Length: 175
Ligand code: FEO
Image (cartoon, rainbow, N blue to C red; front, side, top):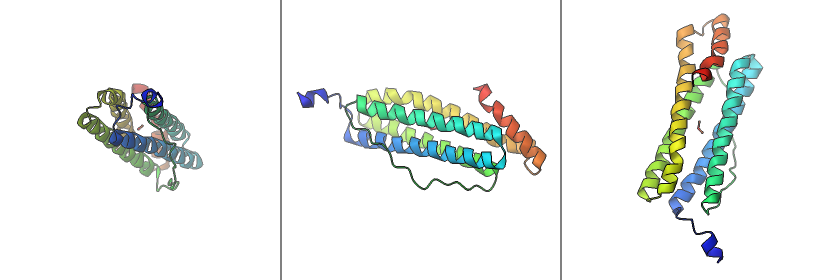
């Protein structure tokens, strides 16, 4: 009986492992965004701080979605250990470029999961992942738009940085 209860585990071992790795990736992304928010707060970029606080929250929600999915599927979600989060950045541009790189990395890990789901004929997981594909597209658009502000406005003066920070506030409004 015990085995039967766990039996929706049509979740293959490879998927189980990759989904747990994704928990760690999302948890790490959340922690990195918090560190970015701190750096921005310290430098007085309050709109950027708010942007990254919100990003951190979203990543945590992504992590929870994976966590719950694994457990619902009869697997065991592992609460990830997150260490070595960088807190130092060269500039505001560096923070946003790092954020964009991070989102591109997450998109690749989601694609890897989709490919593994197809290979394992795990159609439920493939379906579950569709939401994340869409979400990543939106997150990359926002991160790119933020980075573009540095070119459009110019970040070589204090005034430019002040205007960039203010413009960051509007990045999500076009979602
Ligand atoms: Fe959950 Fe932005 O990746």
